[in-house]
Length: 130
Image 1: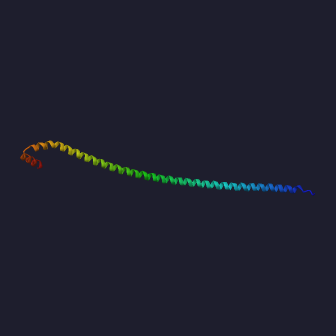
Image 2: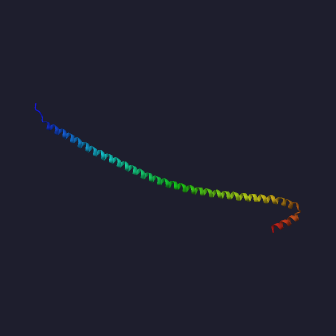
Image 3: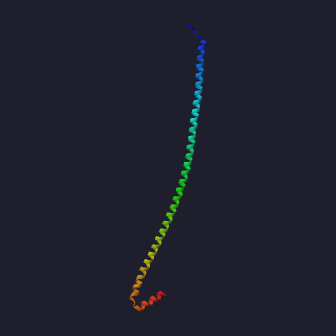
């Protein structure tokens, strides 16, 4: 059996160590790139979510303002209709009370006129109608 020189073995071990070191460095760079790409994607997603949230908030604000405007318009319409209805009822009530007072106040006078002779009744009617 022949003895192999030690130097050849050392060269192989050194070559294996250097190869392993280069492999680890390459693996580190690839891992770093993958992590940076994921972080970039996450940042883009966060930015797009923030932009969408701002857009949604603006849309919600417009919807709320539109709802408030419509509610105020409806409230004003209801208030106007209610006010008109109350005025109409008050006017009709005032007319009814007025008519009732006139009827009750004139009823005894008319009864007294009816008790008079016919010629006096005619004379009073002519004087009233002038």
